[in-house]
Length: 242
Length: 287
Image (cartoon, rainbow over all chains, first blue to last red; front, side, top):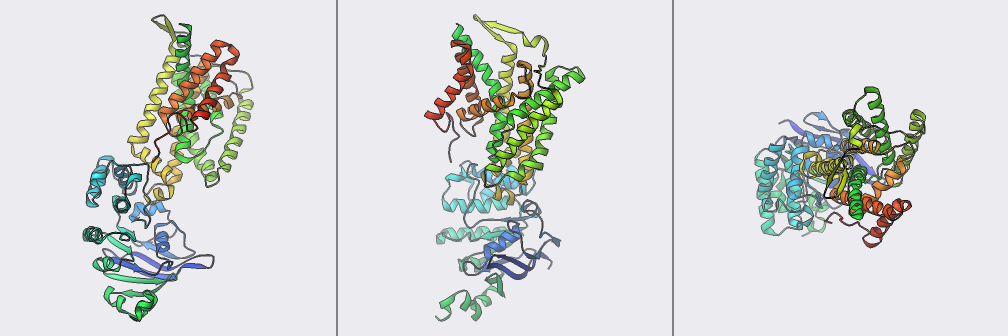
C-alpha cells in the first residue's frame, strides 16, 4: 500500500507547550485511522498542521508523495485535504446549500452545474437536504456538526479529517453518524478521525494512533491498542486500576 | 411643481452618489477595509477618461472600455501589492495606508494635470432633456440613474448568485475557514478591489461628464459615498442606492431653499439618520 499521507518528524511548539514532538506516521490510501489522546495532547494541532492552518517548526508532511509542508491551506484543500471542526464554524450568513457549494466550487473545483449537483448529494448524504435553504447560522448544534461534515465532503477530499464529530450526540444520532462515515469510507475516502467517543471510533477505524504531549505513544490494531497497559495508564488514567 | 422637480432631480443625483458609494460598500463588505482613497480613485478614473477622450478622440462612454479594465487592473495590483499587507485585527493600518494613497494620488494628479478644472464633453447628451407632464428631466442624469440601478443590480446578482459572490461572502464570513475550503484570500480580495474600482471608473466618467473636476475634489466624493453607504445601512447594496437618493434629494431641496444650503442639507439629513437609526435605514438582516 502506498502512503497517501506521510508525516515525518513533525515538530511544533507554542513557547513551552509542545503540540507536536517528532511525530511520524503514515496513512495508507483508503485507510481509516483513529487518533486518541487526552485533552491538550496535540490532536487538533496535528490537524491544523496537516491542513496548513499551522506551520510546523520542523519536519515534513507529504501528500500523495508530494511535499506539502510549505503549501498554503487553500492549495492543500484543492489537492484533496478537507476537515471538519470540533466546534462547528459554518459560514453563518450563507445558506446550508451555499456552504456546501463553496466546498464544491472552490475546493473540488467543479463547474457550476456539477458543483450544485454534488452539493445536493452531500446534503442528502448528511441528512441536511431539508435544511438546504436555511441560513447556516440558524442551525442546531447537531445540524451544524453535520454541516461540518457536508462542507468537507463537498470539497471531494481524498483525505477527510474529522475532529470530534461524534461528541455531544445521542446514541441514535451517533449510530446514524457512524453509518454515514462508514459509507463515506466504503466509497474510498481515506479518513483520520480524532474522537473521544471510543465506541464510535472502534466501529469505523482499522488502526489507532495514541498521542500525548505531541508524541506518538502507541500505534496499531484498535483492540490491541485499547488493551495495552501503556494506553490504559496514560490515556485512560485511573481506569487502568479498575 | 418646482418642489416636485427638485425631488426628481435629487433622486437622479442620488444615482451618481450611489455609484460613488457602491465600490466603497463592496470593499467594506468583503474585507472590512475603509478605503480613504476612494474619492481620489474616482477622480483618477475621471482623469484617465479625460486622457482617453483627448488622445483617441472618443466619446467619454466609449472611453469606459479602456478606463474600466485599467482601473480594475490597478485595483487588483493595489490590493495584492499593498492593501492585503495592511489587513489584520488592527483597523488602523488600512486607514493610514489608504490615507497616504489619497495624498499620493492627489499630488500625482496635480503634477500630471495641474490644478486647472477639467471637464469631459459628452456632446449633445449633456443638454438633451425630455419633458413629461410639466417636468423636464435631463437625459444625462436619467441615464446616470439607470446606470446606477443596473450596476447595483449587477453587483447584487454577482454577490448572491455567482461562485465569485459566494467566495466573497465566505471570505468575509470567516476567512480562515474559507482558506481551508480552497479559497485564496489574497486573490479573492484582489478581485473584489478590481470590481470595486471598475465601478469607480463608471462613477468617475459620469462625474467628469456632469461637472468640472480638479485633483482636489476627491475628498467630497468620498464623504458623499460614505454618507450614502451609512444612510442605507452597511452591507446592503440596494440600501446604498436608497442612501444616495436620500442624500441627493436632501441636497437639491436644501439648494431650493437657499443655494448655499445644498451641502449642509445633505449633511444634516445624514446626521439625522445617524442619530435616529445608527445602523442605517436598511441594515442587512443580522444572522
